[in-house]
Length: 344
Ligand code: ASP
Image (tube, rainbow, N blue to C red; front, side):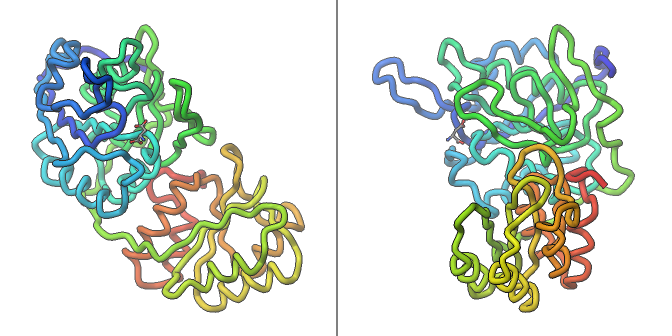
């Protein structure tokens, strides 16, 4: 654990506003929520001025609810960072909470060779509401971004904790601690002081920064449940053009052993569809072969998603399907660690 010291040089931070609850403000007359003008964010959040750094602002033309986020949006967001990467020391992205963990995972795969922090934050209550969590989330995210302890990763800062983005998931829509990361410790915790978990923060990359573009969305996500019809699985896996699917299994990667179920999965593998096994549990890891109920999956060629979140698994699959030509390479990279998304 380490505490931040005073920064010597004035840092430059780009605040990127995409939308979400954080950017809404209650109209005093109508009570309706409306997006705030983010050019004036330092007026809305006066505390930022005391951080003694230079802020740049970039607002998306239309503020969106993050339920409308898609890979095209990730492309645009990555391009904003790419364009401004040299001009700024860190980036704070204001984003809706609903798909924040997907965006964080997607960006982590797109942005290679990071030496600067990319911190995504949002809030459960809009800016301007008396008990809002927006102010403290923005202020602390910015403080972490200017810190002398650099976190050169795509992270989510929420309710006093900084998480690796591709390890995070939204686990509650009603409490302030909306995010958790059960398989990886927080990278920093903000109490009276901000304590950085320097042992677990990725080192600044020695590779040159590079933004990769492209996702292949010909994928599916199938959650196994008792009573699921194999027809449903088969139909999904026979979707024209399908290249890969995440199978969300029980516990440590277990699934039914009925011959029909396994036949349907094997048929897909034989047709060249990549199947990746992740657990429905937020904590713990897929261990194919530990139980007989996962041994069969291993045998028919389902790939273990290890301890990846579903958000990391689906974005990684879409990313690799677009970036790599060879199935062998895609499978190898799915099993390996690209950006700290799984425990090797
Ligand atoms: N629906 C909102 C969004 O994800 C919720 C939020 O920001 O908390 O954009």
